[in-house]
Amino acid sequence: MNCPHCQRLLYSRQHARCGYCGGLLPEEVRLSDHEVDEMKAEIRDIDARRAVAKEKEDREREEQRRRDRDRGAAVYFPPGPF
Ligand SMILES: [Zn+2]
Image (cartoon, rainbow, N blue to C red; front, side):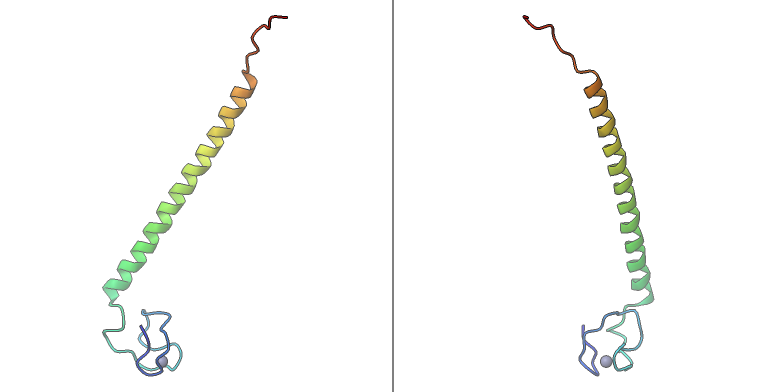
């Protein structure tokens, strides 16, 4: 979406005015309060999911490390034919 006054790309549709020329943006260009809220909620949601995923990943990595260590300690050498 471009500014109808200066034709520059609008970096944000949350503001009532263009960040370049200060021109008032028409209603249809702007996101409604409801849409802004929805967008923010979505971002929050994504952040939360990312945090959970990272935590899970950390936990799995830690578990894997522990498993590797256990396996390393329990290596069984069968008695050879020697
Ligand atoms: Zn503008």
